[in-house]
Image (cartoon, rainbow over all chains, first blue to last red; front, side, top):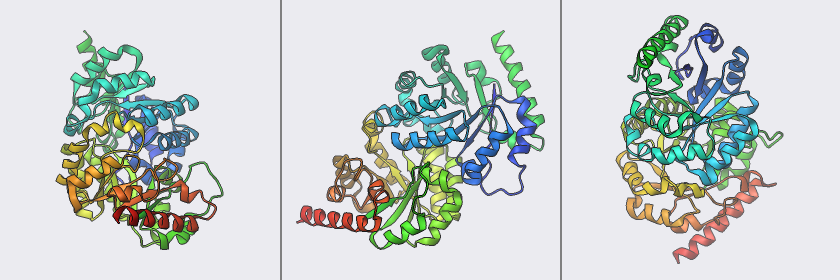
Length: 224
Length: 224
């Protein structure tokens, strides 16, 4: 139920090596998410090393939003590095975009997770006006999951109502961005994504353990 | 008027080295565009090497579409590698997204180019329904340029009408994707972006020269 976003600030030096961080975190988490800052800093070699240091799922969050050819090419390459899923935007549409990406996803077995809403306020300007269309699209391409932010629990509940248990819901926005651990799970998410709260902690393993406990406690309360 | 997209197929081996390709192309082109396939294959070292091999503008096209913090972080890192501009989507909105990216752009001098329409058919599903809002947004954040596809000249003409000469227009979609060299310039674009037609040619320098000639010829005709 806890996915850790491992992205480092690109300029920061002397941080824990990713493999050491993963060693501390591995027993508390369901998987890892890495994005552009990780890719720029560590390159594909960094992804390979992360793959060697854990058997938990690795989700690559480049928020793909390009034409189909380019996205499929990127996905096929990530497949060879052993990643488990990629995150793509819905707003580039089906024809010539997610259509091609989903074919590459099925051919390689790399899962596709689709952004249907984001955690920042600007998500309401355009993205959130299309949530229902994006959910139809997610169903059409048989997405493994969707991203819906913990900062907007109403959207999470809506996703769960519309798509039932056919997709996993991943929720960023816990911690620094304002939502409390467990709150997205209570709204219907499967996974809460936590980044800096854990990776910038003096004791990441202990922080991850404590967040899991908070998640469980809140979840048990809202279910009961 | 000609920008070359240098992205290599990630898996292809034994291609010309980027620096050799650039040496052949440099006198015919206005700049270079690189994206995720380039970044995955060559890493930040590849960007540094490209920077060393040309004084022409380097545009990094990651089609940024993340929360503001992440996009600003990526832009600041690319600034240190000497890139001249980045391409971002308009879709993520202003507040907490392009707002932060444009501040980082002004602070670093790295230009911001905003996607207002794309070359694939799926662009009509969501993106193209917001073109006018995206143009307002581009003006608001003082974007250096916008991306509008050669495959949709009507959109290019519309951008030019609405924003006048306050922005540069970059047009992908020439060549493999169907539009003819010069056609986007005639509709009002400043730059046509050409990729595979040049990079997969047996003689990239000669192909670039020939495309420039086709651009000029068509442009002179449509202006006359």
